[in-house]
Image 1: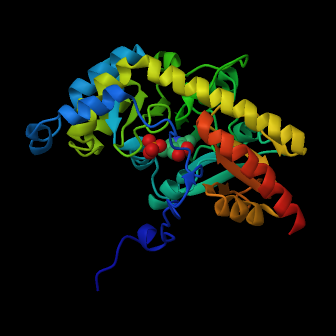
Image 2 (image 1 turned 120 degrees about the horizontal axis):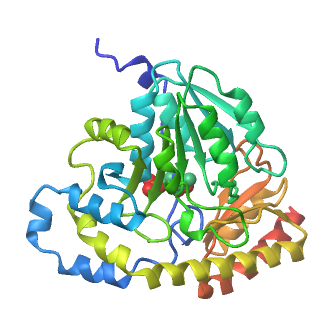
Length: 358
Ligand SMILES: Cc1ncc(COP(=O)(O)O)c(C=O)c1O
């Protein structure tokens, strides 16, 4: 009788996080600004050959290498960042090797780790939800082969310092350390924070991944970027499917990178929206985590489910994180554009009042 590999048979069925598109989707951290008009114009100008011919990813990788200030051999384009993560996990984790990360974090890490049969080792954050650096360091073992850290993190929105991340990278030279910078563009301000891409040169076990799904607004086109030491990117290139990234998004890449004003205006709007949410949560006396991303995590308490339903009735979809580790009573809200925020802020106020009565 035909059977899949044991690790596949043991996987829990995957449920799409998209429950409904009926309303304003502030539940998936997508771009509410859409995408650059220059990307849309490029899309409209495409010809049949962009569809009929197999894609060539190398030109896109050269563009990205130039943009990121590294060599093309250090860059692999991927089908969204999810594929980049999957490639690293598949390449470095043997069955029963350890995948290490801190909870709460991006839900794909344990799913991808389980798919390759790795032992998933979770370290819990404290109440402040910051990266538990010392606890992570203490859990590094000879079997640790991948450490995954989202920076800034999802769902907390918090960023760790470069010094702390490098401590982890340096303490596990036998492990691939993936720094997931999906929300990189929204980060900034007074933090001692910066991308780890310039550190790749000194750390052959370090990978930094980026995505075009967030600040660039291209989630539907699927484009991620994996960067690392040339030697390791070469291994991953051998593992990846040769036509993993479609020709349509590759044709749009140059315009996406060139339209700096779209990204900077989008980021500025997100920062304003974050401040509005912070102000409102302060007014309501709700605990929230100061975000460096395009979403904010807020603790609405035991009535989180009622709150989410009340928001939905007002046409706004937000994500209940109550069931996630360390996130009891928490809801994650993607920041909307200014006009949307005019409706979202009163909806939060009313839904909160409604959940208090529940
Ligand atoms: C932390 C983090 N990493 C990676 C991803 C996946 O991005 P992509 O759409 O490029 O697969 C997400 C998506 O929400 C994310 O939150």
